[in-house]
Image 1 (spheres, rainbow, N blue to C red):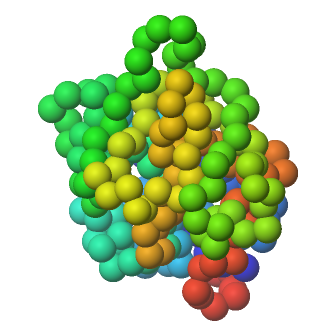
Image 2: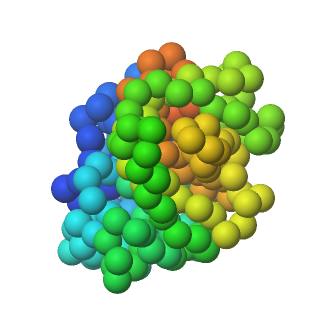
Length: 211
């Protein structure tokens, strides 16, 4: 079983994410200090709430720079919802608050109009790269569960691994090296979500052990 650390910074649906990862064969533990990163093979950063609050909470744990270093070293990372948005430079949700900045781009808000905001409920993905590790053996247009009002706009479109149509296409997930991040909630996406999490777990190049 792979050792996966779920970052606890007071802004995530930790129990649901942990249970879903356990169900697909991972060994999970909460990570709230930099030292805990030495005991894991991969890191998962979930998050719900406001961009600025999540950024401040993550900084308060002392994990901000260690996570930047983890990603720079191309170690396995999965961001979920705010854990995806925080990878970018800034967000319209909280002007003046910097993100981790490991991916160039900004986080935009859905335009008000005929669409309801937040984008909430089931929607389908259009997979950009058929060989992306997260979507191995999934159907061509998998349905997943979203809850969000903001979405990242990567400066480098080549990292976008899936899009979703909500008044226009947006980047529903990205992939770069050992980094993957998704705007939807795999822990709430039933069979497809568990398959995505299992693909992440099996992609981790680490000893099969749990300690």
